Amino acid sequence: MRLATREIALLALALLGGAIALAVTAQTRHHTASGPKPVGSYVALAGSSGPQAFGRKTACGGVITSATEGVAHPTLPCGVRVFITFHGHTVLVPVVDRGPYTQGREFDLTDALARRVGLRGVQEIRWSYAAAG
Image (tube, rainbow, N blue to C red; front, side, top):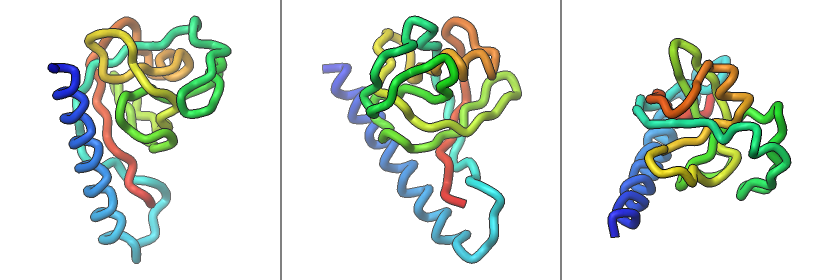
């Protein structure tokens, strides 16, 4: 029952973020922008899917390679882009898979992304939705 409650809360958060992203997009439609802007600021526990994921087909229809930069999340839609920030490194990446399947994590970073931002083990990250620019 706790898992269902968590999933409902995460879905509500994702829907709220989507509504915020749409509102921000509507307000900035007439301004020129160089790219998406972060919307919101959230804290989550994240780990890496590691090299053992290489060659695995994702729930989003891709295949994880050593160069794939993206995240797995249980409720965010495939392809949605999010900003991931860890130790001063901020990267804009897509949701490429469902997961994580390890208890205590809210995100799994691909091995390439974890290496890029310096994440090892399970750590607290910051993340934001990417508003259309």
